[in-house]
Image (cartoon, rainbow, N blue to C red):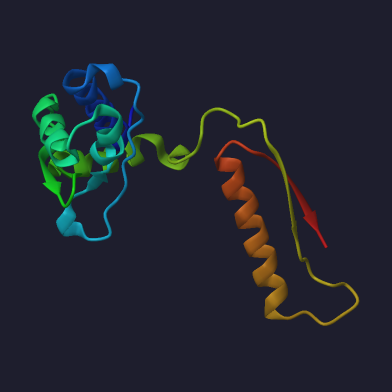
Length: 162
């Protein structure tokens, strides 16, 4: 099951292929805007592509928005500033993440394929010769949480306690 961000990125790639076919291989960057009023996602692809395509970034953004394929995910797309494309999702698209979380359960957010990278996480454990304090427990929990997070992202993790 693809996530919404991936599908929106594919729609923008399809719009590039239609509006400026010579640059269909352009990668599409999508970011979360700092302000919710600027949409659910924002892309600077029109500004990044404008020089190569020898077009005005704002006009290129207009062409890309016009070429976006119809989708039940996108409510609207707007141009901001010099050529940013702000994308607003439909309520159904925003809520689809809940169904995905319920379906995937504890596996939600985990990478299915191993990264091939081996990582060693060293962290403090309780000192058997000295007094225990809150810092020992905190560092042990923090180190184990970091190691677990790395494992969910496909890394082979070795834990070392010191």
